[in-house]
Image (cartoon, rainbow, N blue to C red; front, side, top):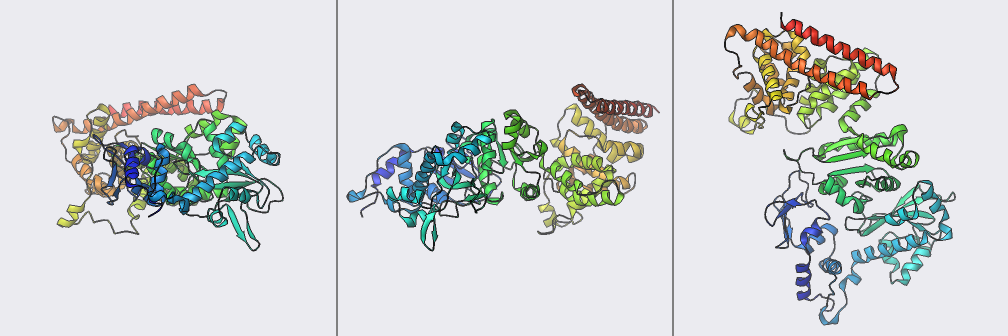
Amino acid sequence: MPGLIRRSDIDEVRARVNIADIVGDYVALKTAGVGSMKGLCPFHDERSPSFHVRPQVGRYHCFGCGEDGDIFTFLQRMDHMTFTEAVERMAARVGYELRYEDGGQAASEHGNRARILAANQAAAEFFAAQLGTPEAEPGRVFLGERGFDPAAAQHFGVGFAPKSYTALGTHLRTLGYTDEELVTAGLLGQGDRGVYDRFRGRLIWPIRDVTGQTLGFGARKLLDDDQGPKYLNTPETPVYHKSSVLYGLDLAKRDISRGRQVVLVEGYTDVMACHLAGVTTAVATCGTSFGVDHIKVVRRMLGDIDNVNTRGLGEVIFTFDPDEAGQKAASRAFGEEQRFAAQTFVAVAPDGLDPCDLRLKRGDDAVRRLVQTKKPMFEFMVRRVLDAHDLDTVEGRTAALRAAAPVVAGIRDQALTVGYVRMLARWLGTDPTEVGRAVASASRSKPEQGTAAPSRESGDAESAEHQPTGPSMHDLGGDLTTRLEKDALMAMLQHPEAVDAALAQRATTVAFATESLAVVMTGVAASMDAWNTPAWLDRVIGEVPLQFATLVKELGVAPLPVKDDSRLPGYCRGVVSELIDRDLVRRKSELLGSLQRIEGDPERSRELQRELMNVEQERRQLREESFQ
């Protein structure tokens, strides 16, 4: 049949292409043994990698969803192209000239997707050339006023669409493209009087996929008589899907994968500013909010794997404007935060400047500092919730606690909850125990949409079989800090009668270094109203997450390092006091460091001095009580 690629040429192209190089444009791959690489499957949503690539064999296989094939199958599935188009793309990549049966022509000349991509590339070259014309002066002024020189425009492929209804269409027709193809590509519009150029009198940004192919365009209004929206994007086409494209990803993908960081900004000029300032992991959505499909793309680039060894290693940094639209964007991003295994952060520039304006007014260093001074997403959201309430009134603080507790309860890493409980208590000026109870209550009420969690009191075999496994004392390290934290908890859990309730209350505010023990202390803090009662240990067991119940039980029965009963009360008070003293020493060190860094702020200096005096006074009081 005319147009068919010869089988021998298909085999030759397959042999010349390294499948790992191509798949690596879409998925962050890591070595998984001799001759094998793995990453997150691009064909289904997963949190642990089950997608394996064997370069020597030239094939991939996903043990999660069963997807399997060679490089051509991969491209067909990922980019929705035909087999012939996939072969031709790879042949062009390796510089191999294909031969067709019976002297036929390349089938892709009639392939819809390939023709659209080729038309987009031709349009991008046309727009870029137009930026140097006299008519494009408003576009050059726009770029110059934002700190972008011609070299920057060339690097990002920025162009200009003439103020004409026919300029682009006429040019592309001379290259052999039909009106039907150009309308399908979103380059031309269809009206009552015929076809017309969709983009007119606007600055143009090409939007590319990870391989550098132009999928569509974003166009910014420049002229006062332009009645259209401020930004106009390519409509949905066979190759352009706004819910899954990210501007700048073709330039950022390597550094995202290497540094395991992605910075999400809100506009094309923000991406340009970040990259030129050295933040080369910045990308932006294109005319839509950041959603689930974008997350899948980002996770594949990050290698965002959810397992104990890699959880939290990557960074997803959101930048938001302080206006109402930016706040809504922050809420949407927070709603999807759980989909990342990586840590999520928020970066808000001083005075609410976006990265482009920040670079223009304060320079490249300010953009880099914006990213470096990011705040955890949960801290940002808790503060945002609190800002909506009047914390000067009891009613306002109570309402704020009710609103903020579910936010803290939503933290995946249970160990981090301890710090946020204390932080929320400090911001509210409320007892940490009260905050801990509110967070624990919110955590227990979370599983409303799924199956109810199994009861801890159930003794049937099925419940025990499905009880989640968690840490035990055997998993704890043997360093001095871990031993102190463990011993103090054992003393408090086993002999509450030997430790004064006020001393125990103070111990619940200590910052723990061992994550699993920090979770146990959170349970202690939430159970203080049952201190030194027969229900004490059971109450703590009931307050911690289910997978930590075994650890609490072990701490509640493990032998204490005391030789005889007469020394037990003194030992218990002493080890808890030592835990508190260590925390006070840490606090003193932080205050001294802050004091050294202060310049020209006498009021803040006096405040820190007072805090230092309070810390020293508490340490003296603690030592005096220990000897009583």
